[in-house]
Image 1 (cartoon, one colour):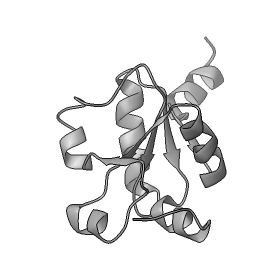
Image 2: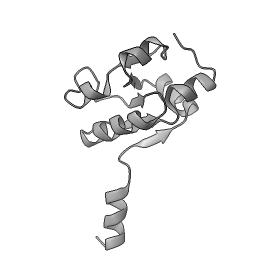
Image 3: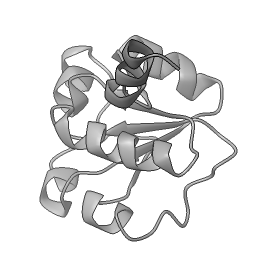
Length: 113
């Protein structure tokens, strides 16, 4: 492997960042949606199909997250979900980070409960 290939691999993301529309398509195909926000953020509104898995818990356990289905990570803005996606990808999950997080979800007019 050449130097450029090695650098590309070292700096590439092991997950894909997706839009709300792409997330909706994946969800309709059976993907799981995990919300890595705090309890307070969760109570302020969440996607109906989301399962809350706080980022700090995710760092110690992925129990309850199906490895046989794609996983979409969501936070408030997309920063913490990127961390969650990176972590899950290193553990062999097919994982995506929702670009813009809950803010983008709301702006797209998607349901919030």
